[in-house]
Image (cartoon, rainbow, N blue to C red):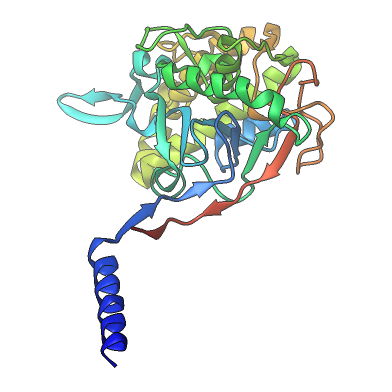
Amino acid sequence: MKFLTKVCFIVVVLFASTTVFAAWVYVPMSINAQKGDIVLSTSPGFIMDLLAILGCYWSHSGMAVDNGYNIRHNTMYVSQIPIEYNYIWFIKTTPKRLDPTRLSNGLPGILTEDIDTAYNTTLNFHAAGGAILKPTAANEALYRQYLISAADVFNYLKAYYRVNAYVNMYQLDYANYYITGRGNHCSGTCWYANYFAGKTMAVATIPPALVTQCANSLYTSVKNMVRDEAGGFGAFIIDIEGLFGTGADEKIANQIVNTFGFDRSADTSSYWRNYINQVTATANAPDHLLLSSYTNPSGYNAGVQTISTSYYGQVEPLVITDGYYIEVP
């Protein structure tokens, strides 16, 4: 009986010790990506409308910089670009143009976001239609070391978001500080992360006819967006402006397309209409990072990569795992 009492006492002590000294550790929200994989996302908006002309399905991309907990990517918050206004006497009226320097050198540029922030707060990435671009199972062991190097490069890089990179992607330096007039867009930065790590991926060539279609789509989308943001009275003022010249909606739309095609970020004229049909773009959208043999959900083979130009041979649907707690002694 005494022996049984001692055993019970020991069990109680052990249980109490475990309860006192055990800790609960939070495992953050994650995605099914390993370090160096590319994360693909869709989202409605003028960029998606523009890229759809090229047969693309995804509109944004970034890179996993660890095993599924954080994404590093390059983006610009258009809503945060300072607006220059017209004035009647001392009364601010309609937008005159966007700040040219900030339009050409977009912020925040390259940044890292955890999965919860990227998908639930900033909404820079969207779960619906999301995918992971990674090596095939057969090449995983061989290629992962190179993708880890690419992710380390991405972690190092710091640069602006450049609207003009959609036409000329070759404008990113190996630097961890901002350089005015230098930077890239989302998929261009993924390309450069691989390039600076030693892998030169293929680059798409977009003929003038398609570039012109993209420019017209961008112009229409931005013009409508400005009118929507202005509201009923603002749109009325814009229409009045249009009777005596060019309305604010047209000026800002021109400004963005001039930046897109020629990096003329201060120009609100229709300059682009006279020259855009002469422009051949050399740049990658997110879909262009895929193998040319891959048919995307829109039914197009928009990819330009081959097995010799890319470590990425497999597209896997995005899977998000919610954060959870585990008990550790």
